[in-house]
Length: 155
Image 1 (cartoon, helix red, strand yellow):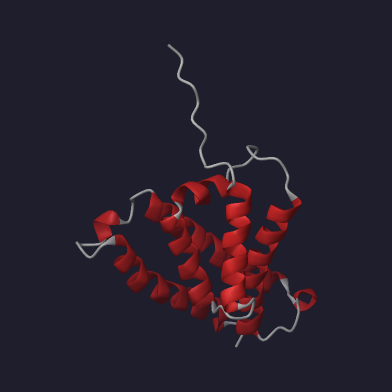
Image 2 (cartoon, one colour):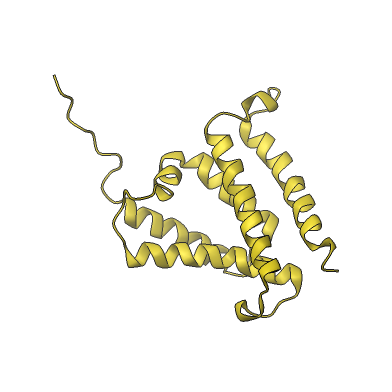
């Protein structure tokens, strides 16, 4: 007997994602995030909403949506602005390939870390302290070291 597919979400995923992004940006403002904070919040969001997080990055499964693309771009811009602040670059037009490589490296780091966290792959490293506590204590120093490495030659 074939099972009837159960809808993944309550039917308002698009609006829920937009609302979550808007709330975060309204609370902190686009310039209110440090790279370290922007990365920790990214992973925290993935841990709190693993289904949404996985869905946001599925390719070929969702139709184009201008509002969602706008929110995704706004979130990406928070990361790019953080990199510009670290490198002392005024605007996106002034960013060099080195700056864009830093954006890509930091995004890849937190995105991969988020996937490891929600897949349970970091659990053996927690040593009984709980995943959220482990993330809070480990990701910040990892990001700090990554940022220091990315900016070492630029100084």
